Amino acid sequence: MSTEANTAPASAGPPQNGPGAAVPDSFDSLRSRLFDSSSPVWIFLVLVALVAIFGALRPTEFLSSFDIQSMFTNAAVAMTLAVGMTYVIITAGIDLSVGSVLVLGGVLAAKTMAALGAANPYTTGWWPIIAGLVVGVLVGLACGVVNGALIAWLRIPALIVTLGMFGIALGLADVLTSGVDLAGIPNRLGSTIGNGSVLGIPWLVVIAAIATIVGAFVLSQTRFGRYTYAIGSNEEATRRAGINVGWHLVKVYAIAGALAGLGGDLSLAHFTTTTISGHLEDNLTAISAVVIGGTSLFGGRGTMVGTVVGVFIPVVLAAGLVIMNVQSFWQQVVTGVILIVAVYFDQVRRRARNRA
Amino acid sequence: MSATATEPQLSPILEARGLVKTYGHVQALRGANFTAYPGEVVALIGDNGAGKSTLVKCLAGAAQPDSGEILFAGETVRLSNPHDSQELGIETVYQDLALAPDLDGAGNVFLGRELLRPGALGRLGVLDKRAMRDRARTAFADLGVDLQDASVSVASLSGGQRQSVAVARAVAWANRVVFMDEPTAALGVVQSGRVLDVIRRVRDRGITVVLISHNMPEVLEVADRIEVLRLGRRVAQLRAADTDLQELVGAMTGVLEREEQA
Figure 1 (cartoon, each protein chain N blue to C red):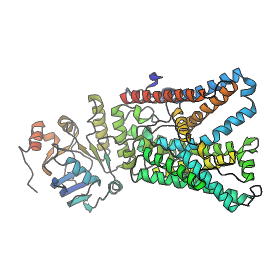
Figure 2 (cartoon, rainbow over the protein chains, first blue to last red):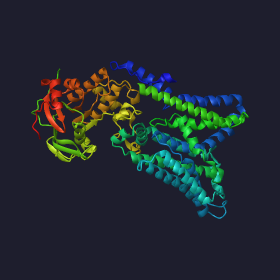
Figure 3 (tube, helix red, strand yellow):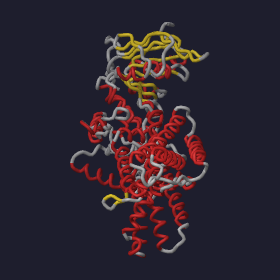
Figure 4 (spheres, rainbow over the protein chains, first blue to last red):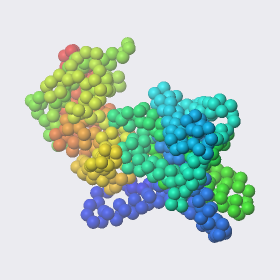
């Protein structure tokens, strides 16, 4: 992997014009697509290999539609968090608060539904449910704006700000519930968005997929995405180019927060309870998914496709190991190894690049 | 030496008169004058602390003089931020390469001035990558910058190519004056030569290049005129063709003073 150092011949010759120039051009871009960390094909091959191995060893169980569906459902909440985390890490930031913000969003969504809905959760209509879901997203958005404002304008390190928010959001969720998970979630929410399907695809998967596709499009095709990469690549240069770096960072953390709020809604719908203590490690899960997917912790590079792969590797591992009757704890071990290898490759690439 | 020195009977494009700038107890500029004519390479030289950077900052709008006057095309202007000078067609190539290494050449040329797709997609902020790449490729080709693939990240280019991207970026937006702060400081001999070629091409397009440099042989090679700063004042204005290393060093160190004390 260390031989792919450069994608362009650094040595200068006369500019190649004419028909011959197209060939090395496309060859170089093929090479860079294969090995460049911003589209890490090797990690995709790891995922394909895992699916192939489990599929070959236990074809009937592993490739059953039930199992595939449950894998996607398990990945849905982690995916919404990882989409926002991808933006944050590309700016060379970090967000440790996403799991707690998810919990706080879910708690306030549940409280809103209870306050506006009927006494009997079986008869609660759609409006209280929708109001609650909106509240969940808005709570996440608000937490994200606070994170972003403290990081961008008060210049407090993102690690500290979001570690603080991690405690604040979780603490508030506990205060609001006295530490007891809320039950009485409207029945309609659980049976539709939470566990229902549309055209055979679970709602959770549909919603997470939409969030991912929109996130990928904005990141790769729009000016907003371009500024996100530019800030992570060279914040000072971005500022000198006349771009309002602080405001852009606030927006990035706000998106991460809003997506965490959405994750809270999805989790609430799926489990029909608030699962307050079940999200302590969500931040680390999201960060490792993003980093395994080839996004650099130093900012400036990364793709949403990579993040999708990074989310699915632990999910596929967990499902496959259970089917193989191997203790599923091994999933954490293997994911940890892959994470370290992924970061090592990123370092090698950076060193090779800086030598150029 | 093929310096086609512009005859200074043209009126100056950019002029500083009696600039004073004080930082705390340090007087960086003590009534500094500076003149740049259209379509020339003018070198601004001086020892460390002579006030070169401060003067350039004032002229690029990055700092405001305490007193004195800045004239652009004969008219007094106030440059309260870099944006003001950019609007006049003045750009700066910074010493520490203000590029985003993970973006490609085109992305850097258009950073902060992205082209958007026409119609509804553009209103959503969708980039017109192809147009930016095509225009960047033309910009590089016009300057003789040798980038075979404009879609490769700047980080994987050589130092000289990177500097060329930075220059191309400034030139793409500057139609009057480009400041270049030590553009070859970090480069080897061959790469420096390429950057000097680029500087000449920029000049040949009628854009004034203000070159800030410590490298005297390089200054003598590429500049049409040379202005020397010492202790916050201009002490000499020389034509490159009529001067030599000894005279430049003399002017910088104060052995020789040509200009009246302002």
